[in-house]
Amino acid sequence: MSEGQWWFCLKHMRVEPEQGCPNKDRMGPYASEQEAAGALQRAAERNKAWDEAEQDED
Image 1: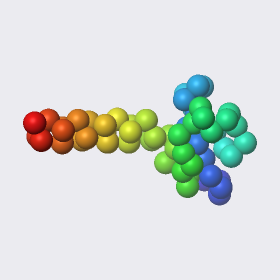
Image 2 (image 1 turned 45 degrees about the horizontal axis):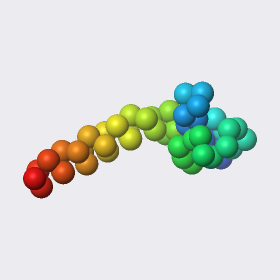
Image 3 (image 1 turned 90 degrees about the vertical axis):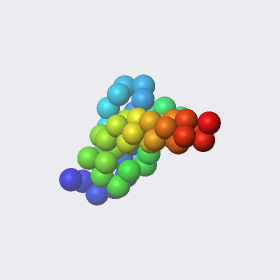
């Protein structure tokens, strides 16, 4: 793994190093390429948990 920061580009649906698309089109930064690759999965899991928590409050 390379050192530095990594992002997941929402426009191109791929992991990018520091030099890449504008930050408005990316999720991150992440400490590793592997973490950035899991960005969408983590976001989906968090969204599901938040939705379930909201349903429990109703």
